[in-house]
Length: 132
Image 1 (cartoon, rainbow, N blue to C red):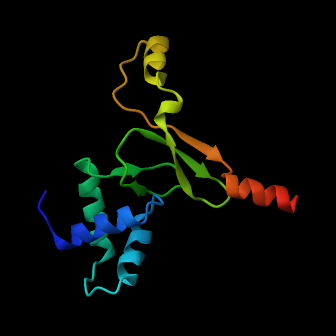
Image 2 (cartoon, one colour):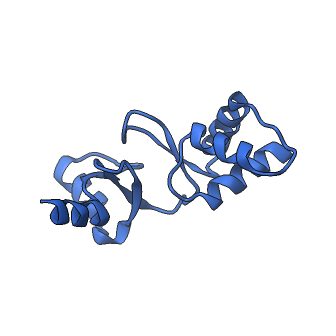
């Protein structure tokens, strides 16, 4: 993949905003930056797709109907808070042999997997307990 100032800025903004942002969120953050670099939303989408296709970043789908991006490409799971709509990382070592057990139970050969938990994050849970 060729180097470009725009791609570098998109990746830098993703790393600096480790909240599993959408392309629109990243575009907004880039435009808020005081640099003279102007990037269109189509450029953001194109570069995010290229970065995810080559494994530099991770594309996350199916959490809330939109696509999010993650600079952390190490194996981990996600938690989607249904209240505040934030996405959090969960370490994969909470269930280190899940793939092996799934293969043994099904006879399948699993190449990759993604696990997403849905519920209330600790902040929203505390707010709910205070208001209820």
